Image (cartoon, rainbow, N blue to C red; front, side):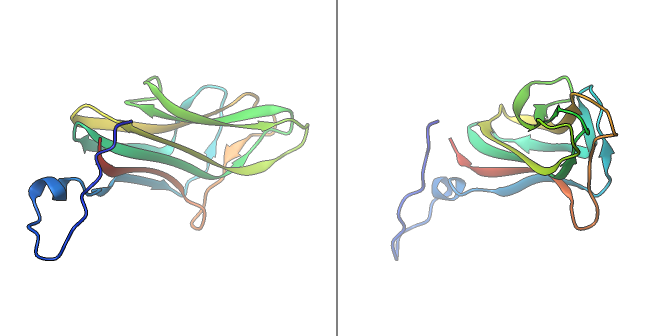
Length: 158
């Protein structure tokens, strides 16, 4: 990844538009959800985990998908969260797998992140989830104090 850092600033110097454009632009899109989601063996968009933003070419974007609690099956299984572009069948940007290797209910938070550039224009990013076995109704557990989040941040120029 090529990086285009800003310059050192000194008193009395003129601040240019090029220097201003090297600063991060911050949060571009944020989705949150307090609604729990029952997992299936088919990868689908988890409740509320869709964002759309306008990308600028040659800028880095950090995408973060967080699930506060994944409740697994009561058998050996894998729970997967995936960041995809466009929709549930779109390009995989990154994923995280929680492997429950015991025949017991297990719970864990899940976190997935990716930093990349996009072509200029409207970009939709989704957070998807699936589980390898549905015994005992595995779910993504959310509530008012445990919110799932899908966040896109502009972190600076390429």
